[in-house]
Amino acid sequence: MSVHYGYDKRVLVTGGAGFLGSHLCEKLLAQGCDVLCVDNYFTGSKKNIVHLLDHPRFELMRHDVTFPLYVEVDEIYNLACPASPIHYQHDPVQTTKTSVHGAINMLGLAKRVGARILQASTSEVYGDPTVHPQPEEYWGNVNPIGPRSCYDEGKRCAETLFFDYHRQCKLEIKVVRIFNTYGPRMHPQDGRVVSNFIMQALRGEPITVYGQGDQTRSFCYVDDLVDGFIRFMATPAEYPGPLNLGNPGEFTILELAETVIRLTKSASKIIHKPLPQDDPKQRKPDISKAKALLDWAPQIALEEGLSRTINYFTALAR
Ligand code: NAD
Ligand code: UDP
Ligand code: UDP
Image 1 (cartoon, rainbow, N blue to C red):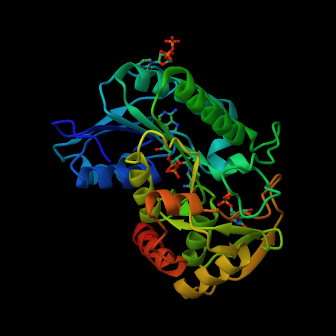
Image 2: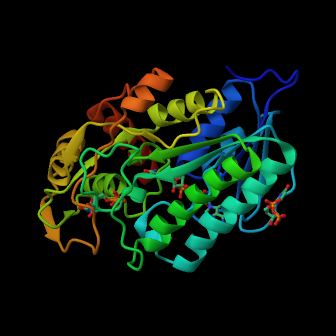
Image 3: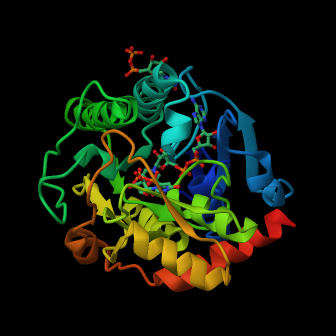
């Protein structure tokens, strides 16, 4: 399925110093690829990839994808974009620019060099869904002018651009809709629920459940997701996606809080805080397409993944 180039496949990972990007770079190197990691360090950090710097097939470039980039590569994984509500709402105009201008530049690059390109889209394109679980055919229920819109609409526009370059310029694209993913190297202060709860539990601080905690999410461990990325990239050109990737196990936020308290053996108590505006009530991927196309399904159960993540944050807190 994958192409043989006669040399190490040259792969560009934008946002490669971030949480998902750093795991992806690692896995691509392990598979023998030549990896170019591009990042402006807005939410990512050199710390996430410092262990790769001496690798002979790894190269790091500080660059903002809203500016053009001229390099020669065979494949592109476009991950550059802040992912947590705190970070993407910090400078919402920049968030839209990163999604939209970033996509245009990476698509222009892919077009010039004939590279295959994967877009890290998101379950946020479904907004606050009225269909449950969400199949790829669902068009979503998105507020175009709310505080989450810079991210949701930016990612939706990026999907539009990917499909227009695919139709208009015959580009080989792969659009992945990622559902909540967690694991080591998540930013400890990014405000996402898994990192928040673990940090609070480890510090013995109150666990902040927003609203009643009956809203649901599905949590995918990072290794499962990255495995799905690489399998999807290797599929034949006639499968552009969009493809849901995530773990269909569905938990309420209250259940997550209780599980984290139990696994950390923390004395923290649960407190309730107001639910943020436009907070989706439920989210769970329908992954039947990914199962059929990639012969893929998540392997790491929530408790196992949480334990690994807790170990990472424990070491960080020392
Ligand atoms: P992250 O914040 O850890 O990683 C994003 C990386 O992009 C960071 O290293 C950041 O510095 C970099 N970046 C941001 N703006 C940039 C720019 N203009 N130019 C260059 N680099 C830039 O987040 P993550 O969780 O690793 O997310 C990676 C991608 O996956 C994002 O596109 C995100 O939208 C998508 N995604 C993630 C999840 C999840 O649950 N983790 C869910 C849905 C979608
Ligand atoms: N681009 C880039 N690297 C390349 C080729 C293009 O960053 O190797 C950028 C370029 O700056 C342009 C964008 O990608 O703004 C879109 O390129 P495309 O060729 O599709 O459009 P055009 O250059 O005709 O506007
Ligand atoms: N959440 C929470 N407490 C926190 C952080 C988040 O109850 O300290 C809730 C949040 O309101 C949402 C869910 O957890 O319902 C997931 O939030 P996150 O920001 O991780 O991701 P997203 O809303 O983008 O799925």
